[in-house]
Image (cartoon, rainbow, N blue to C red; front, side):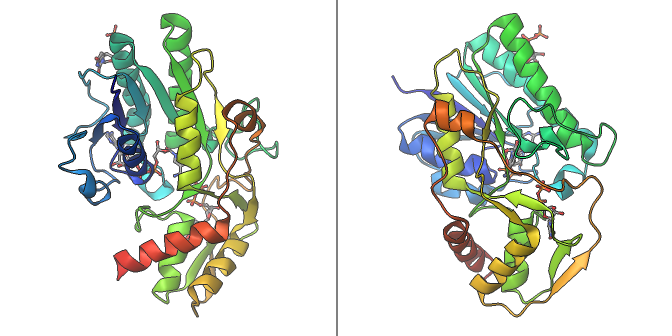
Length: 312
Ligand code: NAD
Ligand code: UDP
Ligand code: UDP
């Protein structure tokens, strides 16, 4: 039987690729988005497809639809966007989770939460395994996102314990690829756009902080495999690429690949910016039989080609 799958945040970067893959796999897809950071351009090619339905809706309000599976991705993901209206960010994570969990409870749908490596905060354990509880500032400028996502995880596990919902929690580490919003200030999109336009490359701090970058196709494969695990598997499971780079290394690689003469400039490091981040993916390897296959250079090539096209 064809599955009816709801993707919240489906017009965003990850959500739009997820809609593509779910449609390609023969599912009926309902994409829900309020277009805060996402765009119809990301899913325009799906409009008119008989298995695709688009709905403008804010997940902080109840949603009554009939579905079999829910991927809950709705939430601004980049610091400048989630800090733009921090109260709305927490509401989106918390009220959004309550509404989607209520929907899952009523429809008996399986529900997956897009959580984040930010639940580990500025980690003292490196790399980060799922068992690490994190070091998160509860009152800082990143807290609306970090604590919102942590509370959403709490809600998922309480609905699982209390109402026996079929839940899956994935903790996503930095992911990049085509359809990232060019204005959302994330490091990969910023550096590529700056390099393409000959603007200065803005390194925050001294560039020694690290991140581990996963290409979108690898990430979505892991996310869909998680949804397909047996009902006794809840996660949380880390998904991301464990190959770690400093931000300075990323800047140099982007400059070289674009063939740009942009200068590197050093700006102040934002408050609570994590110094290091790298997923321990032992659990994902074991349960999902998955590990990333796309090297940073190969993923950047596709991402650069995308930004060349849209910034024309
Ligand atoms: P994105 O900003 O491109 O997508 C988020 C989508 O959610 C957008 O389309 C936005 O308009 C929509 N949205 C925001 N608030 C909403 C609301 N109240 N109601 C309905 N829709 C709303 O970001 P993304 O990178 O695609 O992230 C998708 C999810 O994955 C987010 O939950 C994010 O926290 C999580 N995540 C992403 C990364 C990453 O590196 N990309 C890392 C960790 C976690
Ligand atoms: N909800 C929803 N769609 C549904 C069912 C519930 O949006 O199909 C929302 C509803 O607003 C409710 C929330 O989910 O407040 C939590 O639902 P639950 O059944 O857990 O709690 P209750 O209705 O008892 O508050
Ligand atoms: N960063 C940077 N220059 C930029 C944008 C980001 O040096 O133009 C840094 C940022 O301070 C952080 C890292 O790159 O240390 C990753 O930032 P991003 O916003 O992409 O993701 P997150 O901090 O949420 O991992």
